[in-house]
Length: 453
Image (cartoon, rainbow, N blue to C red; front, side, top):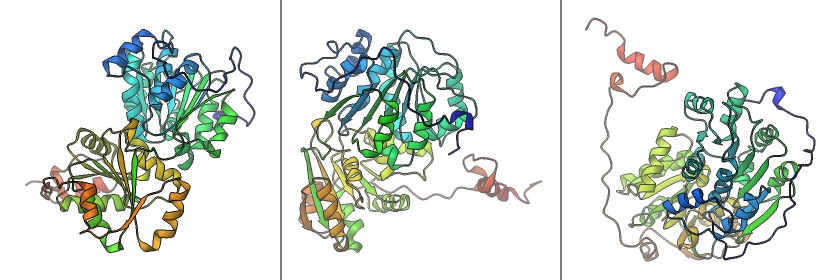
């Protein structure tokens, strides 16, 4: 990640008081709040209805009146509670009828991962179109030229990962001096990934009297850095406890180390949709291939994949063409797919926050779901402490790949998927790669000594 230039690094001082800002008071919104009664403009109400959304979720009902009034918002709701619409609706409503200059967006949403940026953009785009606004995503792993072109075309709202946005600012392609509304989504995950320093610098570039909203599944002491520095009398809204939803059923299965992969294979062999988490990218890649060889169509999602591969695999999981996804922790915040029946911690996380974030991919919006954590006997003490901190009391059992409990969890086995045939690609017909580095050297080697043939 490139460092920001010196002129973009203001001194550490408190922001001046904001003029014209009404002091908000925390409190839950009435349960009868509707989009219209909350003050949502009619074009947005119509756009929501077209998406089949006719009533606000609790986090939306609680935050919308204050957010639409321009107050700073500090919102917490469990994953799947509707936080994205909670900030997307006021973002689109408050930026309507304004003017955006080239390379100077008026709305900013900061997110920790590329997948989450794409998912937020998908939710925000229909609302923005209803108010005659435009949205673009900015993240690494893809060429920057289309992103620069979108900024020059006067994009109103950008959904960005901090690293790539900092790079574009350093290159002079983007300026944040006109931002009227800033949103930090999944702030606790930003902290976990070490993004808070660059997030702080980016927010320092926005006008101090702009509206700021911070949404996350959990709000802990690390996030206080952003709250104290950038938010003025924020209205706090918390919907539901910071613990696993009651609709989840938790199983803790003790397995022999040699049986772990086979146990995962049985658990994912049913017809339901399963999400499996591993601790490392290599483990995710290896497990996905092992499941595929066992006749279980599995995709993978981790940082070693290109952005196009990640998007393609996530789309296949979302549309049901792949029933099983094997992912690393960082992907937990980027997977917003309804209908996930089973979350499996093939490698147990080390912190309760990670457990809750991973597990939150199932039992979304009141639906039921099941979470399986695998442990070896040597890990039992650490996992027991993790469950206690996460306030989870799991159903514990010791299993082997032949245990009847696994089949009762997975359900009837689905038809096996034939693994794709292995093919050998000649160097001269390989997909295009950059003309430098090892890829270019490999292509060049395929043509050596072939002139004149």
